[in-house]
Image 1 (cartoon, one colour):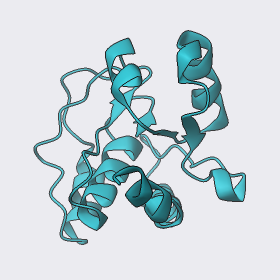
Image 2 (cartoon, helix red, strand yellow):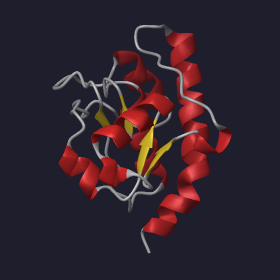
Image 3 (cartoon, rainbow, N blue to C red):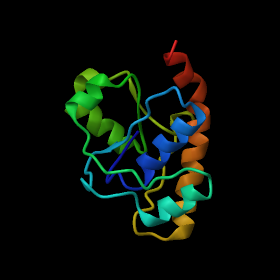
Amino acid sequence: MVCEGNICRSPVAAALLAKALPQVAARSAGTRALVGYGADPLAVELMDARGVDLRPHVSTALSAAQVHGAQLILTMTRAQRALIERAYPFARGKVYRIREHDQLDVVDPYQRGRFIFELALTQIEQGVQRWLGAIAGLQH
């Protein structure tokens, strides 16, 4: 899972995927990561309500090794997908938006308040749900 800062959207998405498919090694990173930071406090709070602990999360920057090692990369926006495909041309064909099925970007909630965070979380939950079958299929 990839977003920008790796403190809001992608850690939430990776945690939701890991909860739904515990056998999958779900990871997250950021294209402009706030390296070393924990998850946003509001993300932690909202995920606590869903029985998921984001406290152990530490933000990391997306690397060529991560891109190479991933079977599937889900971004939050079309721009992030394009950035990854430009920087790592070998990734084409395995990079998609998490809301690709709906042709939607996930809103960036960073420093935008609870309402936008809840909207982003709903968008991510819907995206994860849509990808579960495909991701489970990659494991066989």
